[in-house]
Length: 279
Ligand code: NAD
Image (cartoon, rainbow, N blue to C red; front, top):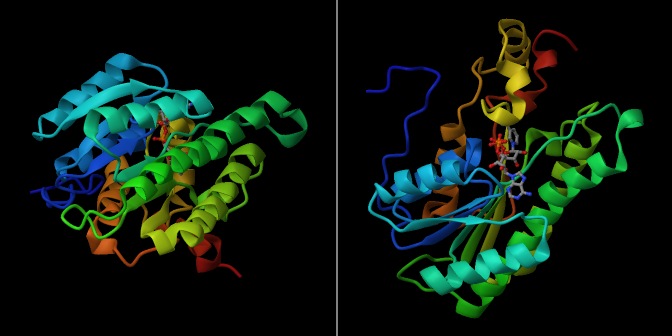
């Protein structure tokens, strides 16, 4: 029994993605790592993309393989077109195809706007937005080539874009990050509209505050943690498994009619918590 209220239980559905081939970008850490492992636990073969830290990626591969599925690690910078093309074509060569893409890789380069360099702006946009576009484009080419295989899934392919509550919540001091996630929202909807007739489901997950290295400063000290909890009506900081569990279900045929939407997994952060007592 799970007795830790901070830690959600994994989805108990080992067969939910049986036989499917999944690619998770930025899967050596945080949300991507938890998602890659959860997809493997649900029966998918999983490619673990990473930009750096091969030992961490290999540890994720080992854990995925313990669920009796195939997995390997592939280094690629998602902002580089040739590397993304190689990432997906290698997957098709090695695993036969791709059924699920979780476009998760992302980073922050925070600065007050008047101090933000063009390099900081472009780095975040190129990884968080262009990277998702490139991965989605290559996955969609393969979805279209292969079409629906009814024994595998009702859809020809599923894309989950890892967005953020900052696709709708403005975030002073983070204009590059918030703009990239606003772009991800429209990327998700536009791709969903364009390819729904071909049975490709494109959706997004918008995490709230999830305890990972990307936002360590927001939860590391007791003061920061207290301030953060004020923004979360459900009064707990999210765990990467909260996102991974949602991704497994969203990728599965249980969500076959879910097309072009964003699932907010945020403990209510987008409920304007300041208005609970004010306004
Ligand atoms: P993280 O730092 O643990 O993971 C980010 C991953 O992206 C790492 O594996 C990193 O190596 C990878 N990455 C960075 N640049 C890359 C590149 N050029 N090519 C390939 N991989 C690259 O942080 P996380 O919290 O797990 O973030 C995962 C995603 O979730 C990001 O898109 C982030 O914006 C989003 N998100 C996180 C939170 C949160 O509270 N943690 C909230 C909202 C959204």
